Amino acid sequence: MGAGKSSLVLRFVKGQFLEFQESTIGAAFFSQTLAVNDATVKFEIWDTAGQERYHSLAPMYYRGAAAAIIVYDISSTDSFTRAKKWVQELQKQGNPNMVTHWQETKQIWKTRGR
Ligand SMILES: Nc1nc2c(ncn2[C@@H]2O[C@H](COP(=O)(O)OP(=O)(O)O)[C@@H](O)[C@H]2O)c(=O)[nH]1
Ligand SMILES: [Mg+2]
Image 1 (tube, protein in one colour):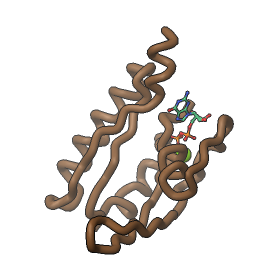
Image 2 (image 1 turned 60 degrees about the horizontal axis):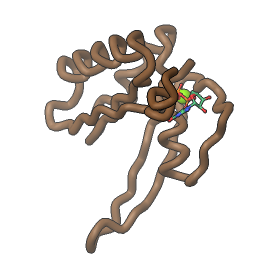
Image 3 (image 1 turned 30 degrees about the vertical axis):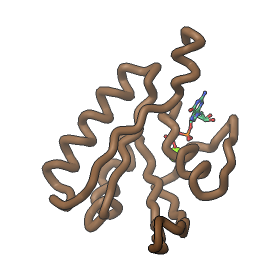
């Protein structure tokens, strides 16, 4: 079960949520343009696949990135462990000026006791 990366992007770009979001193959590209105060900001987003078999592709997407969002599923210890590894990798190999953000998902499951 994915952490919710694609769901987060889909919500941001199209305002949608799919109960059965398909697992991402490799990576998917999205863009969204927003007015932030007086500026217009265009977000160019690579939604990467988290599975180990796609890991070697990841540097292509985070190299040169201005920001990274590390997403983990609050109901899964395994997801949290893997998220920590991504943080270490980004610190070691990512752009040093990159802004990183931790994002928890699936809080609803926690409140339901799942
Ligand atoms: N309950 C709940 N389910 C979520 C949430 N975010 C994603 N999901 C579900 O979790 C599954 C995996 O989501 P997905 O976005 O594909 O994860 P990804 O593999 O990290 O891209 C999908 O079935 C989503 O509908 C959330 O915040 N709450
Ligand atoms: Mg995905």
